[in-house]
Image 1: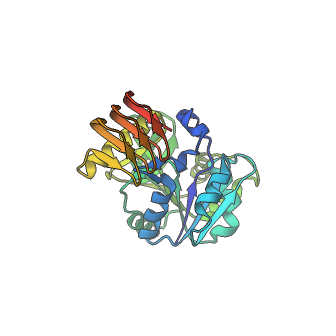
Image 2: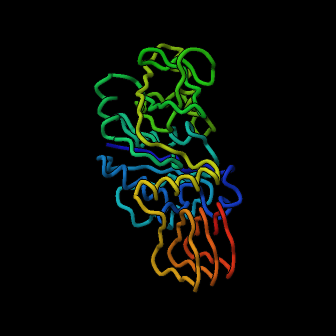
Image 3: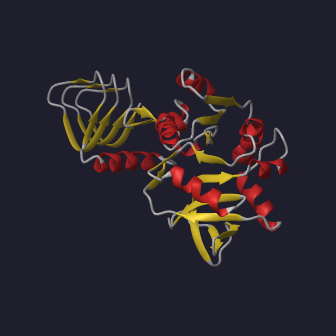
Length: 281
């Protein structure tokens, strides 16, 4: 089975941190998010993975050069969620491909949603959930009716979908294009664009607050409050409060107090610092 991770965006809402690393490479419990996504895809049977990259793309090259069965699609300009897929279409083949945004964390059974899509006979399946903050996809029965239009039952798009690569033929090559516009095109022409609603845990990493909340959630799910990577240097009388995640090779100065803080690998916290709900790079 094939999958594609969309990882080319600028991560604008995560500035200034995204000036240092592209969003899919942000560390999550001291591991680049995209590595977690790759591992999850492989665990569910997706053994060929395409990843598109544009912003700070050299970081993807360095990180993924030793990964097997990964094709890194380096884009000279931003092509959008549809344009990136269109450029990859030569490598996608004819079988349905699973597409996933590079900035989400979840425990959705990807193999199961893929199998259900195959059984449905649909042209595409979008994985939706009830998430009031983002609910803007109108549905009826098992079909998607419209996007960003009020009326009827509405759910939120998780950023996970399965589609027949043939749908991408309407997208002009080498052009910025939103995949949602592609789906609008096919819905208007009677294509079977369905949805599957899930209730599994899901979160995106769209803002600094979301990024911190993700760590708090993951630590609680692992029934711990603190995470320390390898070779962390802790000064005397350092105090951790609530929850804290410290990346590998980080240095925490004497007497520092941290509460709800993520410290990136190799970063340094000054002595006597008092940090709350912060990201240290």
